Length: 271
Image 1 (tube, one colour):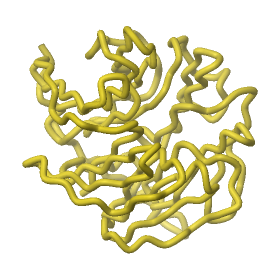
Image 2: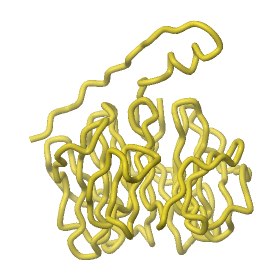
Image 3: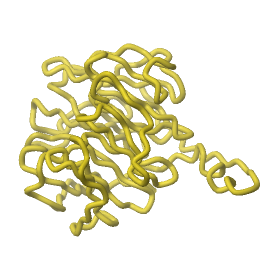
């Protein structure tokens, strides 16, 4: 049985120019509805409420994939086929292009300062959009990417079966088959989808290092998107079954939403 995690906010104090940056380290967001979903082939972005009501924010996009939110409830989407990252201010349907001419952007993530990063399949790297600085370059596609506690980057390489708590895939890393997506919960624990098309699993790791993982969901048909709400309920896009699966904090699993077409990624709002 998994217990409801306590939400802990950590404060630190510092002086000088970097004080605000230090104060924000370790302050994890609270994740809750609305939930956002991308569908690749239909080119759609959805906002989903707790009662499962849906609002379509966009359609006709060219293979939208990664999706992330910031603490102002802005939503960012990596439009893989168009080489762009889109911003939906405060989760509205009126999006703007915040980056273009990217090389097959796949996964997008936001750090605790609100900076947006994107993994580029075409360049096998991760860059920060504000200045295009490269933070990691890899020998294969970075298929899983998120930020953990203290903005520790969590990087997974699908073709190398590796997962690292560092920009350097060889540091503080572990082996996991086909890591396809990563997410954190309100305590900073790391969840990673193992993308087997017939026997996919989701692993839960410690906050700051690989350690020993716990399998929290298995028997999934090609899991992709992951998101964890404020009490530890895990939502999983099961691409091969065209649905979203819910694994509750007390380990019950059931279909939460069906008729999901080519589901890609999930992201909860941050508070």
